[in-house]
Amino acid sequence: MSTETIVILGASFAGLGAAHYALRHVLPQLPKKDGVTYDVTLVNPSKDLFWRLAMPRVAASTKLLPLDKCFIPIEPAFAYAKGRFNFVQGTATSIDAEGRKVTVQTATEEKTISFISLVIATGVSTPSPLFTLTSDRAALEAELDTFHKALGKATSVVIGGAGPVGVETAGEIAEFLNGKPGFLASAPKNPKVKVTLICAESKMLPVLRESISKKAEKLLKNLGATVRYDTKVVSASTPSEGAKTAVQLSNGETLETDIYIDATGTRPNTSFVPGAWLDTRGKVSCNPKTLRVEAAGVPRIYVAGDAGSYTRGGAMDLQIALPVAMTNLKTDLIAHVSGKPPGPDRHYAADPKESQVVPIGTSKGVGAFGGNQLPSLMVWGIKGRDYMLGMLAQPTLNGDAYKKEGKWKPQPVVNNGVGLSSS
Ligand SMILES: Cc1cc2nc3c(=O)[nH]c(=O)nc-3n(C[C@H](O)[C@H](O)[C@H](O)COP(=O)(O)OP(=O)(O)OC[C@H]3O[C@@H](n4cnc5c(N)ncnc54)[C@H](O)[C@@H]3O)c2cc1C
Image (cartoon, rainbow, N blue to C red; front, side, top):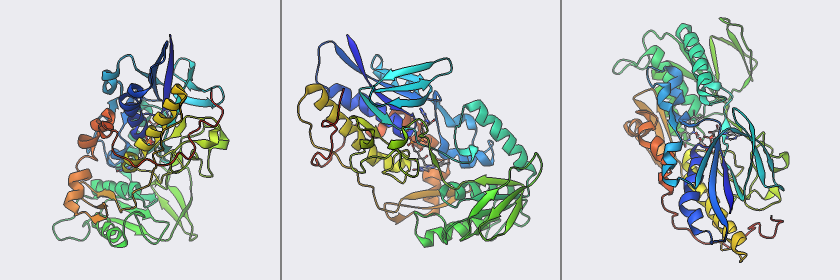
């Protein structure tokens, strides 16, 4: 008896969804083969799902949202798949495409795991340690503790980057330290802290239209936060304890600040991926329609989520992308096991409609969904209440969005990998 394994690297929005999809819709449809069983192995450095969406509020204070709530155990969500599912707590360190195996470093050993199919779902890290689980929970707790002590004494905070993470963080910190303005007041009376948001473009929140972005600026102003447009952060000094940070701007100015938070974007977690598979941004290069990693030169390797070249990222986009990657994985695997020609491809196409929800402080916010602007109260209802912890964390863990395979339009086979060398 031998076991063939679908290996999934990373257990956040993409990896969890991929694992549930494989267990529900791929394994049951594989042709029976004498002496062979199939299972799924999910690899992740942490045994918990880390709810990074809530970190802008946790960064302001754990009194607003305790960090504990942002860690939810992964394995219980797979209790239904006993005998077909393995969880490995570890970090992928290399991929051997020809040998069809990955190397994983766990706390105690270096493991080699063979795969029949591989899904890379290792996402991205942020330059600021406040929004990423870089090593473990204890390290993040220690990081936050130091940060909160410094924030308690701060009179100035500069945030680089005016995408949703920068805007949310500016709003949370400004409201927590300066308080909400009184009824009809346009700004706090005696703000404790000056919060400055540095925006590289002439508009914040690139996904949202100008008028919504302006609304966000007004809400930030109400909390004592200001925006500097058309300015980039060139560098930030690393100060000794208690000293100020010097933030060098593209206009030649230097801001001296008690706290600097880098929210200037994300970096793909792909250091373990062969260089030839990566694009110029370090993302895993894939066929933008099928999400197959054709650069691997061997079949049945896919990418899903923020680590992939096909997407600008975001948890919402995954609900479109993940079923595509997993349907094509299933098609390729059935063809491989049966020796028959593959079925049609499923294609990815991003939803171009304006959709983004951005809380600003604990009771207001801006956003749009499906091209329609959302009122501030609805932004609070959807996300501002608890950053969707109550509404979305457990369903994400349980892969609720992928209970069904969903309808799709069959497309001609572009490159199913069958023509490539296979093992
Ligand atoms: C502060 C913040 C707030 C956000 N808010 C929103 C929001 O409100 N709405 C929205 O749509 N999007 C939001 N995003 C974006 C969203 O978080 C990402 O789009 C989403 O997390 C991508 O999911 P993913 O599974 O691709 O990657 P990630 O969430 O980055 O997860 C990757 C997983 O892989 C693991 N991993 C990394 N390296 C390895 C390795 N070598 N081996 C094994 N595992 C590895 C990581 O530890 C992690 O568990 C936010 C992002 C940030 C930073």
